[in-house]
Image 1 (cartoon, rainbow, N blue to C red):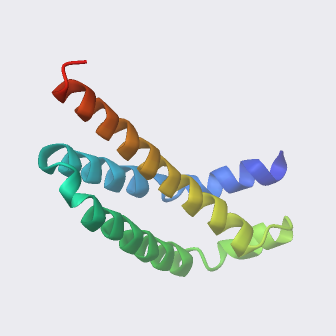
Image 2: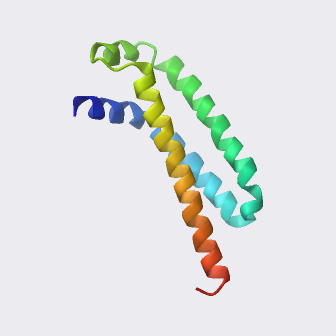
Length: 106
């Protein structure tokens, strides 16, 4: 439980940026259609790397705290980025299904 709480605390420091970017991608996808998905996919991947770089640089000293709890950087980053990307993929799928449903009259 302590590890999960610590991971959530770590993720909360950049979750807003991830959700804001996902919302912007979904808005673009809604207005342009599925043709822009590949571009938006790579935009999301690229900005995840940028977020990683900036957060990693700004939280250098906080890693000591997590290390003392027995949590490595890898254990912090992999679930956080995977969750952020999973939210993007699932919300994209839901949006596309809703858009297809509204076009077919269902």
